[in-house]
Amino acid sequence: MNIVVLVKQVPDSGLARQLDARLRVDRNGANNVMGELDEYAVEAALQLKEAHGGEVTVLTLGPGQATETVRKVLAMGADKAVHIEDEAVGGSDALTTSQILAAALGRLEWDLVIAGAESTDSGMGVMPHLLAARTGVPALTGARKIDTDGTTVTVEHQRTNGYDVLSASLPAIVSVWDTINTPRYPSLKGIMAAKRKPVETLTLADLGVTEAGPAAAGNEVLSAAERPARTAGQIVTDEGQGGVALAEFLAVEKFI
Amino acid sequence: MTDILVYVPNSGKHAAEVLTLGRSLGDVSAIAFDDASAALAGEYGAVKVYRVDAPGADDYFVDPKATVLIDLARSAAPGFFLLPSTDEGKALAARVAVALENGLLTDVSGLEADGTATQDAFAGGTIVKSKATKGFTLATVKAGSTEPAPAPGSPTVEAVAASVAEADQRVRITERVDEPAGDRPGLAEAGVVVSGGRGVGSAEDFALIERMADALGGAVGASRAATDSGFYPHKFQVGQTGTTVSPQLYVAAGISGAIQHRAGMQTSRVIVAVNKDADAPIFGMADFGVVGDLFQVLPQALEEIEKRK
Image (cartoon, rainbow over the protein chains, first blue to last red):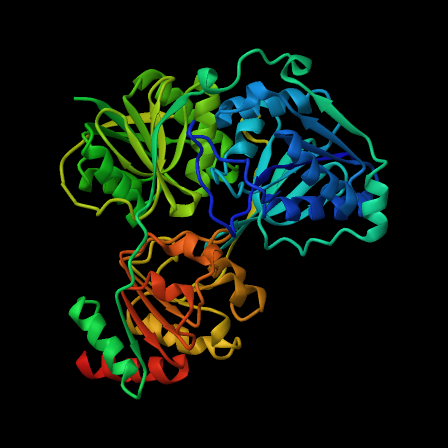
């Protein structure tokens, strides 16, 4: 079973993040990390490979520094990587991104594509369905559990108050939530081995994509502003009447 | 008037919000796959309802409904097509966007008649204004963005008969499992959310958070630290990798307020915090805070709330 896992390098959500002067996600900060949910997608792919054999290919789209994320996935145990790197990609919308990724998927041999349910930066959560529409392959999204017998794939699609069991024939696209597994850490041996694993770099020309960036986007960002910081209100120290003060505040605000 | 297409998945509050927002922009034509959704559309001022009858559509994931929505969007050529920002709403919007090569905006919190959309980037830290440049304004609307306002009318009903094509039968739903949610409202839609963090200390002691939530008629949430420690199930996590909430009242108990968590709740209208540590970042954004032991403060507050009821 050959699996492609989609990963995206994003600015660390634990630190301040911003849009740059061109109203794009500022990726020049020092702290770029793998998308939080991507690690769960990688782990799911590695577990399926361990059970069924085959290869795991990591596919990413991003600037040169995204190599760090690619190396991390290879160190976790993926076999090879495809890194799409092209200046013209900057400022692309999700639709163009899906076109580029679909073109790359068209060059690879796979039974299953696994992605995180959404990215940490834009957080749209639409890429698996955009890719499904472009590749004509079924999408089973928001999985908290994934299983395959090599011909079909079954997932538990997580809902707020339960789950649905979804089933489809391979090839298929699956996205996962962080409830699915506990991602492994790269071992020292894995980190050493990652250095020798093949990474193919592709440009938009290689993929036959001629239009990308803001000109090809279906939306235009008009402006961006920092949300005004919330200012602290009344803070009291509990000296025996803290709970009463809290109830009093809730009453004044008409919550009780 | 501009034509506004609205997908109404059910008769819930979120659907009512999207209908209300749509009505502020023009004449709403609602797409409903069942009677309850069609009734909600009438109650919230739709002038037209596409009442779709697609036998068997519910047995399959996303594809059959996507095909119906694509066809209706193509023939109606609306100014706006709005869907609730849920997993299903986003999936359907994505399918429509690719089929019609149309721009796509997700998690929109506001829309103006000229198509300008407001979105919260970085889970609320940055406010972004965008506009579609290809096709109509296709947007999924975040829960809690609009106060639902009924406007009962008698919409024209157009029956739409759809059959499920073989190509749309690829992802079969073989089982639906509902896990007991109790009487509490859903986390994303709740008007009040009471969340516990690491400071709660154990799964057993989350009962106190639940009692507080019940006293205020709210939902229970948890910080990542609390769900990672196994104090409360993952699906109740508020924050970057959990649910983003925007209730009228957010009560954070034993939560320090790491940026991970703040990202998921900073657009709440009123924030209340209880924490032992006076330097906890959560106090920097709280409208009201108590520096103290949550096991002293919350029981006393509960007692006082009971007295005042």
